[in-house]
Length: 411
Image (cartoon, rainbow, N blue to C red; front, side):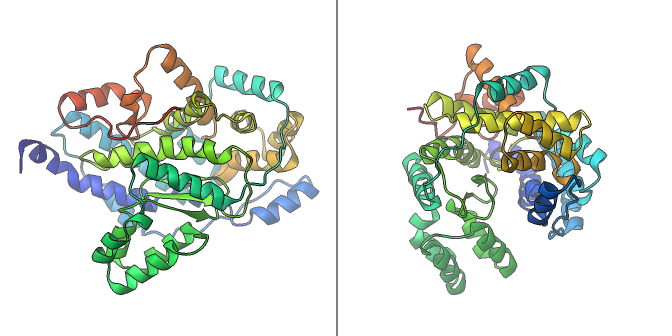
């Protein structure tokens, strides 16, 4: 064991513990209402405020709390700061899941994690919804096309896909585990990757779980939005929707060129926390993704208008408006019933989820960062925020954090 490994060894246990917590404490998953369809139908027919029901907590809460209670070594001050802050963030997320429906707590906790929109962000959002007319263009591109484009983008960057590592998987897995994984990977449309992962968890097969976390898998999912799950190396594309022309290329930039690439570089670091994400990294993450959409010529005015609507919904929530008042305000800005419902739901899920401003706020951050001559390479060492840069620079100087292996293609 060399000096660097000796220095980092005290952090291995807390690193592994927090990665396991990250895989269990899926905040947005647990904030998705089970009765959305029913409540939406009732809401659109009446003035009744929607009351939502949520999923039962499926993970072992005591086990999560025990892991979060572990002491963080102070041998490397910068790492101690990183792990203590991440513990606090995951602890808040766990409490939010336990206290869904407690509006005051959910709003306070989510504001602590994600911050709140300032006047510049709110004013920019209002300008966008006024300047960009409602767009409802044709959406004829099937989900499978989007999935395949993204899979090719992963290969282009040199990330490892499970479907390309069959021989290695055969060596790792027992017969039943290998057949189960191959049945999914060879399925024609790779439906419901999220459901497959739940099935993997239920098997209790640790070797299978370790194998599916080793390589990237891109499949279709039940969630409406395309999503990267860095802790699992999963990417899902909604299988029940069609996409607009250009969405596949835009999502390849956004999801692969930023979300997956920053995770992949994080896994190249000596500690996995750089792949799961440091505390408060998501504002920079989402801002960088939208910024690179612009830089590569793949930005969508329809999507930008949606991000602006998200800011307005969060701003309305923070002003004390109820669901109906926020919905009506969005309608005044020419959002359709469907759009106004989705935007309001995102802001009021769990009781009041203050997060959705980060996409537009992060974009403004990135424009300012570029204007001031910011170094974009350092943002690719892993999933870090702008506020982590001084700390990360010190870790690079100490030889603990490496420069990024994978870099975004901006052409």
